[in-house]
Amino acid sequence: MGPILFSAGRELWVMGILIVTILILVKHVRVVPQETAFIIERLGKYYTTFYAGLHVLFPLIDRIAYKHSLKERALDIPPQNCITQDNVVIEVDGVLYMKIMDARKASYGVDNHEFASIQLAQTTMRSIIGTMPLDKTFEERESINSRVITTVDLATDPWGIKVTRYEIRAITPPKSIQEAMEKEMRAEREKRAVIADSVGKKEARINAAQGEREQLIQQSEGEKQRRINEADGKAYEIRAMAEATAMGIRIVAEAINSPEERKPSLSRSPNNTFRNSAILQKRITP
Image (cartoon, rainbow, N blue to C red):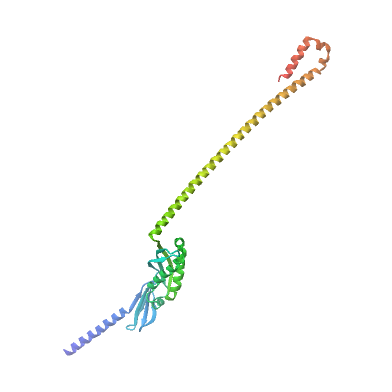
């Protein structure tokens, strides 16, 4: 009976040790997801960095100190009051996009890299807004974004962080300033409307004057052409009459100078005179 109990107890101890060993091994086997980094410390000191894949920790010596996502993240920058160059208090908020490039520096370079990046972006924004008047803050958003990215990225480089983008989400001036800006914009729109109306009336008058001028020119051209045509007709009529008269004179002259007309008997005979007149009339008639 005694040996049996001893053998059963030994088997229980062996099974317990095996179970504990398996649990320890399972606990110290880690699968790191994609775009993730585990910072491993051995006896309290940095040992290595586990990236995506299967990894095994040394039991009781190694431990996972930090876990970092290597994906690009968007950090919400809380609204903050900034004073412009012309002493106007405005509220500005934005979004900061960042990515961890070195997990070790992000773990040991700063205590909380997200909080530190947000604070740095806020202070940089206040400094930049302080160098601009109110109107420029609305016009030069791209320039402000670029300056914030450059400054924050340079400051976070020792932390192993890359700042990729910064976008101003809203710029909110005080209510009194908003009302003044609305009045200014309304006055500007009314001014543009009046100018556009006056320009339209001016162009209409110019077009009407040009139309009248072209109409008068066309009328004068028509009158000129009518007179030219009438003059051409009269000239043609006069020329035709002159040619007919010259032809008649020439025929009469030819008749007078003919040998028959030189004979006295013929010139004194009434019958011959009547015949010569008929011949002349026949020659003149076309």
